[in-house]
Image (cartoon, rainbow, N blue to C red; front, side):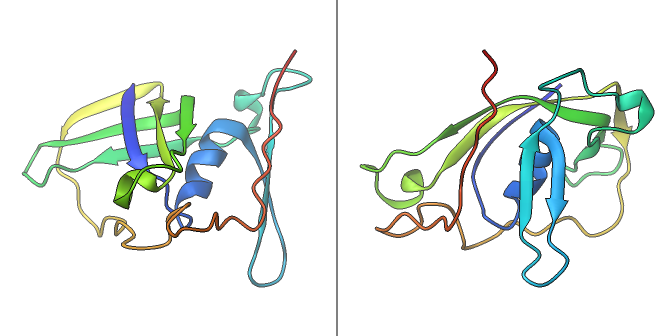
Length: 141
């Protein structure tokens, strides 16, 4: 299990939604809008049969043999929060939760180029709410 807490950037939020909801359909033409629906509402997600979306999560603190890899991960829980009365970065949508997977590898030497953290493009980044479409209906009763 790897916990996370972050400001929600529009460019990377889809990775977290896919990890939590497991069904993503992308439009065929630019801007390649994505529709995310909640998997598992009518029956359990068949991960063994290649349904759902699994991710590999890397933590690279920068030292040799210090990396951590979590394989076959999904989001166990995610809390989204917007405080419209805050100022600065605290005004942006915040997310926290846990990635869980079935294999954790410690003391890994990681290579490659990590994803660059966005410097702009956060939800609720200005005085006007900026999501063009943001509908979530994943409630089970």
